Structures are given as C-alpha cells and as structure tokens.
Amino acid sequence: MDKAKQIQLFNAQCIHNRIDPYFAEDIDCFYNDSNEFSLNLKRSSHGLTLYGVQHVALRQGFFNQLPQDQRVAMLVSKLQAKGIFQWVLSELDSQPEALVDALDIGKGRSIYKLITNNDAVVVKEKPNNAQHLFNQIAAACDRPYPKSQFKQVGSRHWELSECLDEAPGGDNGALLAMHAKAAAFGDFIELGDRHFENYMLKDSSLIAIDVAHLMEPDNHHWTKAYISGGLYECCVLQHFASDANTFSSALQLFFNEYEKEARHLFDEKQCQGNEDVLAIIEKWGGCDGFLDHMRGMTCDALQVMFERLPYKQLLNQLVQSGLCLEGHQELKMYYLADEKRMSTFFRSEELGVDIFETIRELAFKKLGITQQFFVDYQRMGAQLNEILMALPQQRSASNCPVSSH
Ligand SMILES: Nc1ncnc2c1ncn2[C@@H]1O[C@H](COP(=O)(O)OP(=O)(O)OP(=O)(O)O)[C@@H](O)[C@H]1O
Ligand SMILES: [Mg+2]
Image 1: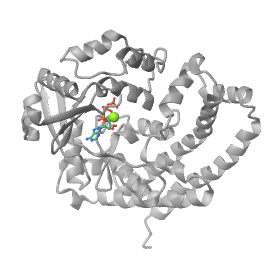
Image 2: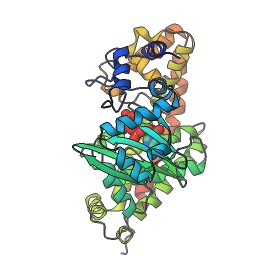
Image 3: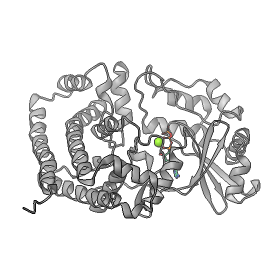
Image 4: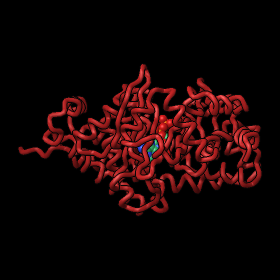
C-alpha cells in the first residue's frame, strides 16, 4: 500500500482536537531524519485523548510495511543517532550483519523489536527510571519482572528488554488468579497505569513492562478511574458476570488469591531487608488495613464499570446499524478506544458532556430501545452490586482480631 493511501486510512480515524491527522511531511520526516526515533500518534496535549487498536495498527504500518532491509537500515540509523547502537549490539553480543529484521511494536509511539538470527529484543525510550526501580523491588519481593538493561544518554532513558508474549485473555480460573496476584502487587507498591497492554506474560505470570508511575501521591484516584474504565486486573471479572452465582464464586476466588499474595508481600522476612519494601510495609501500616481499603475501593469502582457496560454494547449496536460518528467526536473516540478491548469509557467522568445520556438518546431514537432495556439491565446490575457491596463487609468482619478475653 502506498504512503498516500496509508495516510488516508489513518486520517479517517482522526478525532477532532484529540488525535490529529498525519501529513506526508510527518511521515517523510520520520523516514528521513534519523533523530526522529519514533512516529508518535499526534495526540492533543490538553484534554483527554484515547487511541484504539485501529490507530495502533495503522501507525505501526508506516514502518512495518517498508521492505525488510529498509526497516533494519532505518532502525540502525536511528539507534546511531541516539548514541545507543553500540550498546544494543554489545548487549545482543552481535555484529551489525546479524540484525535480520526490525518491527515497530509500540502502541502510541514507536518501540522496536530487533531480531537477530538467534534472539529478539525490545528497544524503547522510557520517560524516567521507574522501571529500573520497579525491577529491583520486584526482585526483592520475588515477583517477576522483565529481564532488562538500562542506559541513560544525556537526559534520555533507554531500556533493552527481552521480548515477551502477549498475556492471554479469557475467562478461566487460572487467568483470574494470575490477575489477582498482579493486582495485589500493583496495589501494594502503588504502581500506576496498569492497563492490560502494559502487562506481558512470563512463566504464567503477568509482568509489568511499562512502569513510569510508581508510588505517586494520587495513585488512589487513578486506581479508581482505571477500574471504573475497565482497565485494571480485577476488570477481568466482567467475563464472569453472566449470573450471580458464577460472579460470586469468581469474586471470592479473585480476592482469596489477592489476599494470599498480599499476606506474602507484607511478610517482612521475605524481602531480604530491602529498604524500599520495608518502607512500603510501614507506610500501609498493616495487611488487614490494606486489604480492607483496597477491597472497598475495588468493589465501588467495579460497580461503576458494570454500570457502563450496557452503554458500550449500545454504542456498538449504533455503529453496526450505520450511525455515522463524525458528528459525535467523543463517541467516535470511545468507540475506537474500547473496540476489541475490555475498557469502558475510561475517564469519561472528565468530559464536559454526559456521554451516557447521548448514547441513551441515540439508542431510543435509532435502535428503538425502550426504557425497559435499562430497567432490565439495572435489575441484573443490582444483583452484582449486592454481591460487591457484601464482600468488603464480610471480609473485614473476618479480619477482626479475635478477643482473648
Ligand atoms: N518486552 C516486551 N516484549 C514484547 N512486547 C513489548 C515489550 N515491551 C513493549 N511491548 C509492546 O509494546 C507496547 C507498548 O509498550 P509500552 O507499554 O512499554 O509503551 P508505552 O510507553 O505505553 O507507549 P504507548 O504510548 O505506545 O502506549 C506493549 O503494549 C507491547 O505490546
Ligand atoms: Mg504502555
């Protein structure tokens, strides 16, 4: 496909004031200027901007559809321009001739998979050194972390890491347990931005590969926003919501695993005297308090996620029935951002408009949906809410120390 066609396809997915179109000059600059390491999505710096899987595939295509030898030559010149080519070669223990392919695997920006005859690594720029700190803390807690090398050149941070597999989706108990363990660790160390695409799979565990926000003061606020938006580990529970019994068992399983992991993390003996971990344990003040706090917040935010799900279904139906989203740019953004993902209108609470009201009105008008749809859904939702609301209380009662008197 030629460049003009690629640009045309991408620009059909632009979102007014949020994701800007590409011009031929943007792409030429990325191709010809070695200093342009990445082809970024042109996201607005003010206001909420979410991209979808279609944006990603089209953006990656500008690099990945070039001929193979050109891809390798282009990446080599970009690595040289950033002063990291020799470092990458030495970490790979390779000569330049051994590089056989390069692919852009990044989402909103370019991140490269570099392939040799017997190895593949991922090269990316990082905004800070939080991943390095995370890897050290994870090692001390006996939690998995990516095998990575770090290098700072001037003010830029670089990471070279092993190439990991995508985490599988699905609805089985083992996956639920895997997500619960990751959630407990993420909450314990206050790791932010833990959406599904920031985890990869290694040895049946989820590994955080995009650590930039660690122990930030507003982590609590963001945890609620990500869960409400269907983006944190516990949101896999949406696959278990077909009936009250299934949901109740899944929720129990999730929090049993979560608790097991939390008790392990709070055990001071296991962290080999690591001062960062000891400081985290002290900050939380005790495992029972941590569990109560996190269960309460998680269950509240999950209720919001479940309230949003029918609107996602209606938006899909509206698009399938031929609604043109050009006159509704916020709906276009959420349709694209939530497509083929578990997310549900992430950060929609920040919009100036009530997006759910807009969907509701359109559904009445264009799909012939009646009030009964919402009444039925609320009845189902009320059952899930009851289960969610009961959980923190049941648990916190069972956590009360038994009096010896
Ligand atoms: N070590 C890795 N192994 C395999 N794939 C990786 C690895 N690191 C990153 N990726 C792929 O690249 C994607 C983006 O990586 P990452 O989350 O680190 O970047 P980012 O800072 O979030 O950039 P973006 O703005 O693109 O989201 C990941 O979702 C994953 O698909
Ligand atoms: Mg990421």
